[in-house]
Image 1 (cartoon, rainbow, N blue to C red):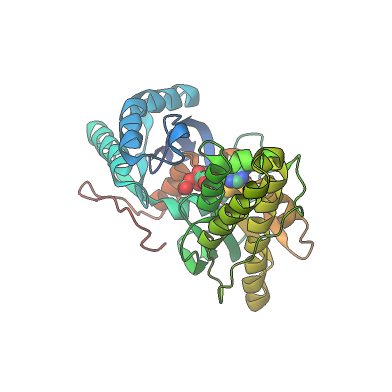
Image 2 (tube, protein in one colour):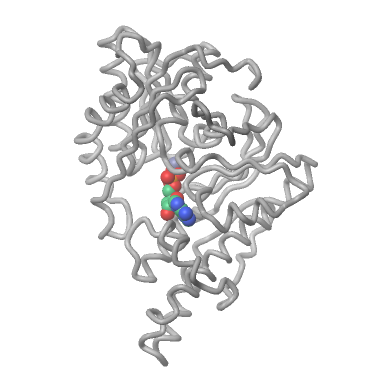
Length: 346
Ligand code: KG4
Ligand code: ZN
């Protein structure tokens, strides 16, 4: 199937996303998003990261109202749905089980199929989510390179088709979003720290402090060392000046953000040079980062693709559209499918 084959007439899909700390439900007609309701869990803020047990409970509380809200916003009756697509991994097992069980039960009650969606594939397919009247809708043609940067993963993918994706490189330890969040915690900011670092960076100098770039061969990444060097740097400065962190917070944020974005950009240039592919996309939560978006847009030799903000961080719109693509390829799920926690390929 090609992008041109997409129509916005059918199928009508309910998408459910519950892999981490967003409970989300969406309705799509083909690749047109009719509703995309996202409930972000606030319960993790003070813990500096997602607490899996609390996440599962919050999904359990939110899933029914969120699905109802999506159907109301889409002005769709349950009986008209063609299938229910849900994230079956990777993610937090308890959280995935809430979405999977709900999707299967509802599909059984309605007598319609389920469709299992790989969360990492869906982040890439977010580029094909379309909103009625969206003037900047601009999906990439195949093949393209996609840097997927989220809280759990950092990957460079060669995307040759909706169902043909190859991982060229990935992080060996922390993901880019995880680096943002862990460093934010060191800086005394609540979870999720990525958007806060982005916000504070606007008032800081990105060249104020230099942090080392990790030396990793090929197309793989490593971000855990950055966290440690920021921690040691602050400890050293605070030994001489106890208010260092408070008085340099904006500069620290801007310098950390600049380092992460530079590392991502350096790596992303390699596969483009090796393959000659100039269509370059980003996806995942960190694709919402203003410095990464700006840096990408500066690459005049590339055709750059950046999803709309609502389809960068976790959302069920991308799950519904991935479900629509699979439905049209007759890739229907099974009721005995079991979610998977770790990334097992695309
Ligand atoms: O894709 P996503 O919503 O969830 C996962 O699949 O992990 O990504 C969440 C990650 C978090 O680490 C969050 O801090 C980061 O995306 N993030 C950002 C920004 N918005 C979200 N990081 C940097 N700048 C942002 N504006
Ligand atoms: Zn995600």
